[in-house]
Each structure stands twice: as structure tokens, then as C-alpha cells.
Image 1 (tube, rainbow, N blue to C red):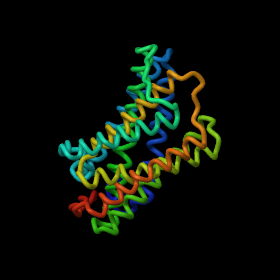
Image 2 (cartoon, rainbow, N blue to C red):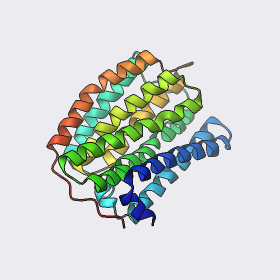
Image 3 (tube, rainbow, N blue to C red):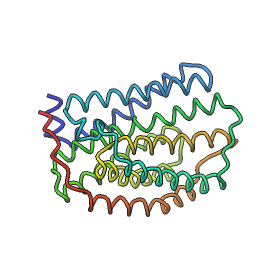
Length: 263
């Protein structure tokens, strides 16, 4: 029944998947808080996040969407090379905008590794549901025509951006949360484009996870670090070339085979 619901009502289904991601985040956070210490807490959260990602992979398997989502494909050398270039570009941009330099000193390796692993786990936790389950659900609704692909990418990206409203619960100002949502919506476009072009989800899982890990480790090393609205706005501008590249990939990508009906 749930599988039929996914293809008959993919918009509502995708909203429920988005909410489930937030629930898993909260659950992982509670699990981490129950374990004392910076190292133990972060490692516990990472375990919770990887477990949640595994649950979403299981759902893809039950829906027969493993191939369509790119879970079963490791990707070509070209896919990984392009991803590497994009990771370097965005990592450098983020560090310069938020920290002002590219230094990467680690004063407490134990804490940094735990924080980095926890941040790395956001890659599979967010990419598998948004660029896997949700993107497939919309493709099943609108088909694999060029117009259907564009609509699917935009809707999945908007939901990805909206999911970051959870930062309100962390005490972030509404204007910063709105900017964060906008930025993640933009990243959702070129993440989806990479998946559609090379038909593997693992490049964006690594892209997302590595970027978050680098920034989280740096933030730990900078006392009193906090994101600012101007910095977020600058990063949104620096994402424009990536969005343009993503648009190019979407228009040039070969049309995919249909997503198997989940009924």
C-alpha cells in the first residue's frame, strides 16, 4: 500500500520523506546527547545518521528503485573527476568566505575526527532520500521527458531547501535560516544534475559529506565561530556557476529510462 501511495501521490509522499529525514536528525541528536563527551556524542550521532541512511536504502530496494536512484552504480571516471573539481571549488569558496583563509590545523585529532565523521554522515542521510527516493518519486509522476526531469529536479531541490528549516530549532535567526534554505535549494539543483547525468548517487553523497566534514572540523578549531547572513549571501552568489553547470548537465543529459512503478 505504501509503495502505491509513493507513485499515486508522490508530492505528499515526498513531504513525508522530508519530515522523516528531520525525525531521524532529531533522533540521532537525542542519541548523541545521551552519550557523554564530544567524541562519544558525535560518534553516536554519526551511527544514528548512517543507520537512517540505511533505512532509506532499504526503502529504495523495496520500491525497486535502487538502479533508478543510482545506488547500484559506482559512476564513471569522468563523474568522479567532475565531482572532485566541484568539491575543491566549493570547499575553497566556503573556507575563504567563512574563515578568510585555507589553513587547516587540528589541535585535538580525537574530537576533529568524531566531528568530521558525524558531518560526513549527513551525505548519505540527506542525499539518499532527496536525490534518491524523492527525485525518483517525482520522475515517476512526470516521466523522463526533459520537462518532467526539470520539474522533478526543482521540486526535489525545494523540499531539500525547506528541510533546513530545522535550524530554527537550533536558535538560528529566521533571516539566516531563510538564506540557508535558499542556498541548500540551489545545491539541490546541481546535486540532482550530477545524479541524472552520470546515474550514480555516490558522487553527490561524497560531495555533500566531505564538504560538511571539512567545514565542521574548521568550525571546531575556530573559537566562537558563527555563520553570518552576509557570508551566506556571498556563498549563494558563488553557487551560481555550479547551478549554471547543473542546468547545462540537465539539458544535455541523455533521457533516463522510466522509474519502475512501485505498485
